[in-house]
Length: 203
Image (cartoon, rainbow, N blue to C red; front, top):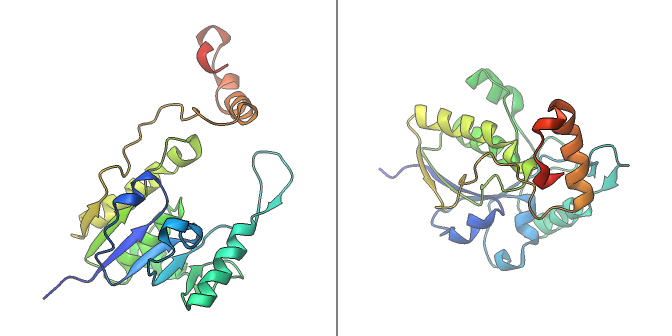
């Protein structure tokens, strides 16, 4: 008897390794907006974010890509799973927490893995879940590895792209706009470290 399996896809660099071998393919909402994936078939789209977002203490801005993706999903007849008022399938948060006794979620993929475990998937293919190098992705890595560990403990077979989760816990600031780097660095690092011990390279 073949295993019940699914592919989970995000848009980290390793997404190009995805073989689309399974009948069920779940993607983050941005997958429907990626030109290189326009001919790929998705069976579910997961969207956890709110349409209005903010970075640090800046004014909220409307994330129009969520509306674009939702519209595309409607055209293709793909359910959008999440907890916001724009989704078409409500995420079973209470059921997940009741079964696994945890609400330790983070990036969208953590909700996707938990969903797969709740509904008894025995083999999960994961691509594009690279969690870096940007700091905002690296901070979500512990939650991702938690759910991967839980899946392994439950006997679920995991197949991952070679690049998945390869990033280490370095500063993760390379390539980001200087204003963002300075602001985040000052909030998360400078105020906690004596001046004599600060890293001059990123000041």
